[in-house]
Image 1 (tube, rainbow, N blue to C red):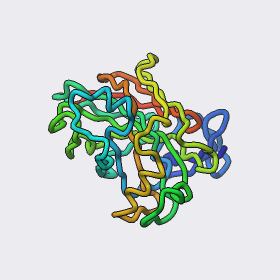
Image 2 (cartoon, rainbow, N blue to C red):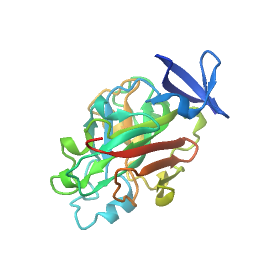
Image 3 (spheres, helix red, strand yellow):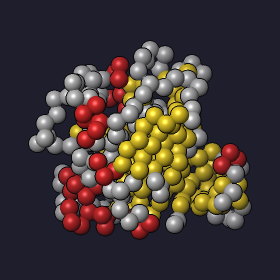
Image 4 (cartoon, one colour):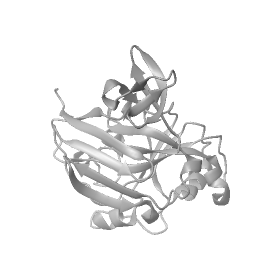
Amino acid sequence: MTRRARVAFDGAVHHATGHADGLRLADGRVLAESQVVWLPPFEVGTIVALGINYADHAKELAKELTLGAKDEPLAFLKAPNTLIGHRGTTRRPRDATFMHYECELAVVIGRPAKRVKRADAIAFVAGYTVANDYAIRDYLENWYRPNLRVNNRDGCTAIGPWLVDADDVPDPHALALRTSVNGRLTQSGNTRDLINDVPALIEYLSGFMTLAPGDLILTGTPEGVVNVNPGDEVVCEIEGIGRLVNTIVADDQ
């Protein structure tokens, strides 16, 4: 399996690959995870995020939802300022009363995609990574429909550590997801429960917008989101894709 990353080290940005002792830079140096600043593992283009895209999460929010079976996917855009890398920190606004993680399979587009049919969609995927897209329930207009500041705050979305080639993921719809907070398992799910799977999302999105290489689709999170606070370490793991670590800090830190 090829695992690729981008990191900052010794005043420069480097491409790296996975190694038993951490990571190997393109020049051959092997470093520990803690020796580098992790960046998003590729140059990210447009970021499209999905809300309420797991059946169990929809059930979890059933009392607040007005989502019908025939509704289109709940998609929204995110800005580049939201992204940080593995081992980064995310601020919790001082006025937040409920801020939660969202462990998500992130799909990376590999070539221009316009009006792609479902049957052909996977061929347009370059690879996959892990995303943790924090949301603040306080900011939602009616609890489930995202508005701009819910998911577009600086540094609110960690991605990485690795970009895993699509060829190394035989079935993106059979991957276990889990999240732990301070070592305690709080979320567990599987991509088989996606309401709109990867081909469906690519077909839908490319039907009205051209997807470009480097565009990122965050496919949503399963049930099990809990409130997080400054000092919490949040670890999102997806089977075969990677283990993404993030720490919450206070807004004024």
